[in-house]
Image (cartoon, rainbow, N blue to C red):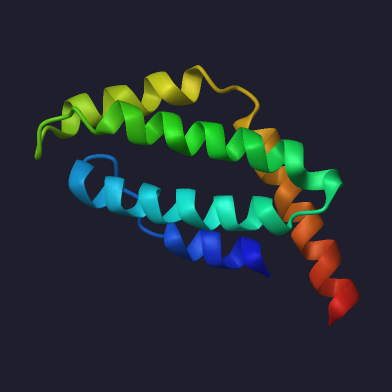
Amino acid sequence: MAQEGLTTTLDGFDPSDPETALDQLRSARVALGDLLDAAPAEVRDDLEIEIDYVQALIDALEPVEPGDATEAALQVQSVTDAHPGVDEAAANLAAFSERECAAAG
């Protein structure tokens, strides 16, 4: 449910376009913060991992010069390498979302 909105926010995420990527990441950061405020305890840790990751991406991309696709890609890779729990957290959130949507549907 809410996870779908976040997925839509990051559709077409392309770190080679740092300005657009930053816009998408900032929107995702706001959406994640809103989700965290309403999240049940069982997913709060995973949401916090995602928020930390998105914020780190924002912090890494902000100083990148517009149009510097190479530096942007290097920054994204560096942040991703420094946040190894992100994929598991995202999978946990997706599974939770599927369960909750199936239960509500």
